[in-house]
Amino acid sequence: MTLPPWHAHVDVWVLLGSVVAAYLIACRRHEERTGEATPRRRRVLFLSGMAVLWIASDWPIHDLSERYLYLVHMVQHMLFTLLAAPLLVTGIPAWLWRDVLRPAPVRRVFAFLTRPVVALIVFNGVLLFTHWPAVVEAAVGSELTHFLLHVLVVGSAVIMWWPVVSPLPELPPMSPPGQMLYLFFQSLAPTIPASFLTFGHRPLYPVYETFPRIWGIGAMTDQLIAGLIMKLVGGMILWGVIAVVFFRWGNREEREGWDALRWRDVDADIRAELSR
Image (tube, rainbow, N blue to C red):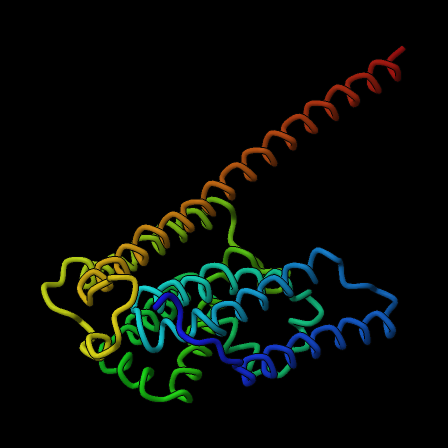
């Protein structure tokens, strides 16, 4: 057996398609009302994030993660949290975020949850909760539970990424040094659950022992690979973002330094002319 039999996840298509349609309609109405078009870059980022959600939620990843391999479940969660979520946050323009956060109670709660320390606690609390053996077993046994947990995971990831990629001036991202420190702590946080998966001497999720084995991957090997994916792949992605933030910050500081020097030279030339 190579892959589980293909079948359409119509619920995924309808749900994600509806979200995409609502986004595009909102962008069109905003342009008609204000004359301000949503930048193409924003639309591409949002649609890319939705595409990642679709890939992670549809065949074969969904089927493999739910009925065969825990390592694919881990890949699915990496796609949700480390790829789809930042694309969605940056793909939604500021005016649309304002519409979503217009009710005062919603805005206050969201502002609190996206504080850096709170965001770290929320995201990693959800991470631990969704990887608790009893929760994993409940998710495998119920499509509704699985769906609600995915909503919780994506929502917590949006909160986690907000201090880094926020497009909203009222709730701005942290400074580049703060972003790098924040992502450094986030890269350390999954070490605890990953260590249980990597160094465990028995399957942490007995339900996965009952599933058919494919590709010659036993239950313990499956668990080991899942732990390595959580720690190494997740860490590489976060450190990659840290590197991008660092180099962008350095380039901006260098440009601003050169601009300051040029303006100083211009100012000196003007003063020299005036003194003649």
